[in-house]
Image 1 (cartoon, one colour):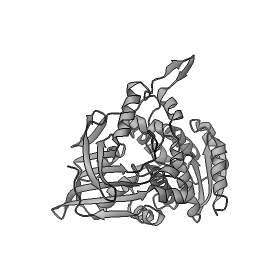
Image 2: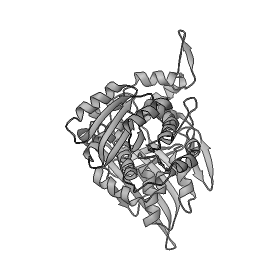
Image 3: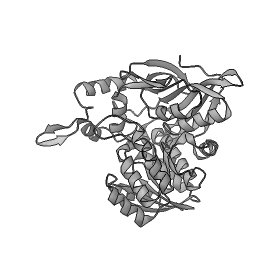
Image 4: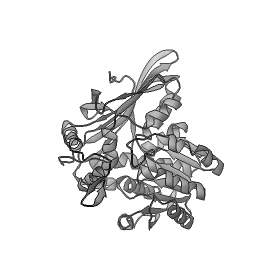
Length: 399
């Protein structure tokens, strides 16, 4: 049906590209572009028997002029950013210049400040609208599927959603003393930042890891969960009718937290440059370089993830609660795509969102968060492409 340019060649990109090749009727041709072309070539070699035609290229995604040249040469229908959220804006600029649709999985954040919010990308709404192209923001799992879950719950199960708790649990064990399941730089910036939640029209802020709960997750059991600041809260607060409160919780083991605290105490999680032997380095970027590559965790990670949403609200003037979630097995993901479940649960939704935009099902000129579209085609695709969802109409609440 069409062509997609996929920027990035890490674990998430690998999963998406595997899924694009499985869906060759839609993705007839793709280009994998990264700063390191050899990684793109290696992935292409693994998929040489697939029907989808695969091209590779080297590109600096910080450089809009380079991106424009690449897009004009390949002429894709859509551009997908699976590199770094720092690069969202340069890629969006290139899409406007070439009038190509845009998809990402995480909202923009500046390199020099551990702060992410949608204002930078929402500022592009009129420019994308005037160009007649669609920008789909946050087509991963969280954000991504969690937004689709919210839209689905609102459409089919509630007249008003009043309370939403997003729960992200990873019960996987990779055997390392300390490692992160996705990009260490992004992960550690997120975890060491202040927490926040939305209530009655305002964001309320907490210290990092200040709020801890315990929840009994289907198929993985009791887990400690901690309140974090997370990007989809900002858009869901605008798009859910009647919403009063939104929180986001993620699981962390005590060992992970102990290691992270030690690293933080000695300055290794800092994003402020320091001078080392005449060179300027950023401690967190150095730490990223010595930690295990998340893409290497697939063969050694065992266990499952459970990510979903607990809703409370009203339907036909009666109170209602509803839990919508997905359980994913790390080893099953690895057998299929060579990646663990964290990459899988982001890469599959990236393919689905891209597919829906390419098909015209989700095309709407402007910049849009994922919950602004009809959730039903996406929900159907989740079951088809490897992330089946489950429902509980009487779930336990977080508190």
